[in-house]
Image (cartoon, rainbow, N blue to C red; front, side):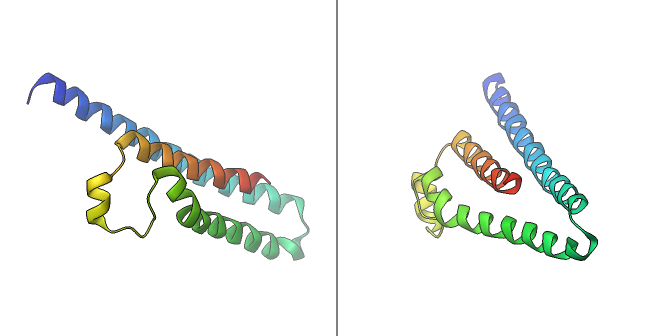
Length: 111
């Protein structure tokens, strides 16, 4: 293994770790928004607020995979693996797509 491939592997691993930590932070932000909203409503409405937050998260995730995935990658989410292997995006593009999903979902949660 030469130094160039070792540096490339280390760079890709660091990028993946950075995106993973970012995704964990976004999920933690959702929990924080849930607690914040629960603190602003009366006790009888807390279940309704939690259901609204969970439904919002679910709808935004499904919308990303049906609409945002094709915008981010240029291929349909249901495209077969053989097509994705031939025209698959670079690692940086996949990471940017994950960031787009996280940002869009967070924007809906703040709303």
